[in-house]
Length: 310
Figure (cartoon, one colour):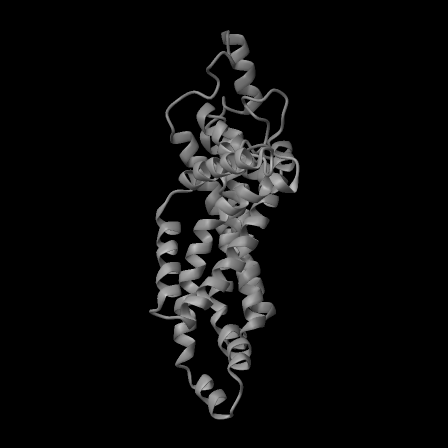
């Protein structure tokens, strides 16, 4: 298991290096000037800014500086936010996105496992048909549509109740998180429901299920100790990447609900061509995703002995 873990860590480091390199090349291939928009009003100021950010050096040298700074955990200073380091932006605003993402993944995982198990139990019957119809909607409809509908629902609920039952937007309390987290987790919940249903239906026909039935075990014991436990393994496999995706991918939801998460600053950086913020947040997102995949792979090895043997 130690050798397996070391191999996964080495592969993760290589993946992060590739993400950083691809991001650097992509950003320097984008047309435009990051020192425009009144940031360099004279040639002297422009020369000083280029020297400060290293833009007056050849690309290979800029790349070496970028990688060296990244290895030290330094992503540089924002081009557009005065005297603010990219590390500070990540440190201040990623916890907001992470808090929202954790609550969303709890909704998604609990709902996906529950609805997936129910659809397998009531296969081709009314509960299965109804839930799968909602799953198709959850996968097909974009998150910004659900965000707008969620806000409209909150407005109607508050109007009907004659007061503020749940905040429509903003950040600061647990009540502010409920609707954005639910909206953010709907797509993942739908995906996990479909995955759980397929896995449950495959497990039903396995030999160990027939053996458990032949031994006279109760239906409840077979379901929880044999069927559900084995069917949940594929869900755990994809849960790590989904955690990273939800935690770092709520850009639209954060914008709609006015949440001061890291996604909003990433969108602003793209609009303003802020090289350092774009590269820093992209590498951070990529490293976080790789870390979650590695953690899930290691946990999967403890859950399924066959992984350790291989």
